[in-house]
Amino acid sequence: MRKKNRFMLVLTALILGVSLVLSGCTAQQPELTKVKLSEVTHSIFYAPQYVALSKGFFKEEGLDVELTNGQGADKVMTAVLSGQADIGFAGPEASVYVYNEGKEDNAVVFAQLTNGDGTFLMGRTPDPDFQWSDLKGKDVIGGRKGGMPAIVLQYVLSKNGLTVGKDVSIDTTMQFAAMPGAFLGGQGDYVIIFEPTASSMEKEGKAYIVASLGKDSGEIPYTAYFAKKSMIEKNPELIQKFTNAVYKGQQWVASHSPEEIAMAIKLQFPDENDQILVSAVKRYKEQNSWKKDPVLTQNDFYLLQQIMKDAGELNKTAPYEKVVTTKFGENAIKTIK
Image (cartoon, rainbow, N blue to C red):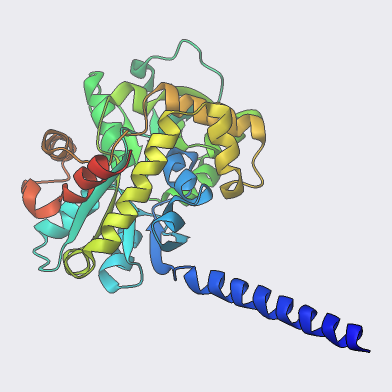
């Protein structure tokens, strides 16, 4: 009986000890800060962001990111300005428009992710010898008026001697989500599409990639993170942590193969063919689509606005220091190794 009592005492002590250890571990777990992030569309083009999510870089910084698809830069900006989203992820042009409208609590860009256009021009038949001059007299479905896809499309056409409205027609009446269906339904002669939709359409034999907008436009600040000025002022630590995680994602993507990147972002595209994921990542990586740091430079910001002016979408230049802050990106580069 004594042995039994002694055994029960030892067992009870062990159970209490394990419970205390476990409760101590639980207590040490930091509480994550919830961040609502609205992205302009869901695309492999944003691989560094998805890597930051899948590899736990945001959680390392103490953030729990809730990602939603805004389906258009205008809708993302509306979500940010109305407080439905803490951070928006779309083209910097949206922040320029808001500033020029005189909004007092305007959207400020604090980190840049992509280094150029992520769309591909698709035709109805394979065309390995495609030239931009082939678009003369054709109709191209080009995305929403004033959005980055349509603006960069006009920029590339202009670089190749084509005048919109005279040599080629661009349909800017629809959101990106509706464009693949419209093209497959018979509208337009060509369409611009992000990955992985472009490769999926090509694999199904429904449309064919004939040119890369990213390759032919060169480096342009295409997609970036922004938040209301007041939100950044009140939550600088949160914005810094978010930028740190984005930078970790950029670094990881820069140092890993297309196959490794595809595996890392697979959870974001669970229904996508692995081969398509790898080929799409490889396309973007080869054309230098992803920035290696989060800083939006002054030269790139004013290049963007010049392209917007040339496209007829801007009549007033917004000052860099009012629409962009680089301190979070610069701090990330200094501290994250």
